[in-house]
Image (cartoon, rainbow, N blue to C red; front, top):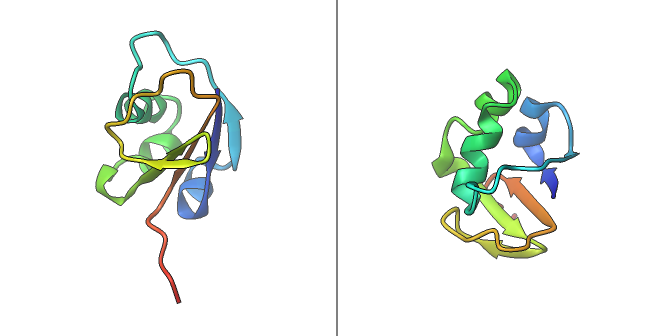
Length: 83
C-alpha cells in the first residue's frame, strides 16, 4: 500500500510517500497509524496527536475508524483550512 503524507506530517516523517505492507491485523486507518508510529521517531512524532490527523483512502476522505479494505493508497494530513 502506498502512504502519502502532507504538510507537517510529511516534514516530521521526512518523506512525502512510502510503500508499506502492514500485517493482516491492521484493518482500520487508526490501526495503520498505530502501526506506522512504530516505524521511526519521525513517524511517532507525526502521529502523536491523532485528533490532529485526517485521512483519505484511494482519494476519498474517511474517518480514522474507516476500514482499509483493499486500499491501494492512504493519505494522512492535517485538517485542511480555507482562506
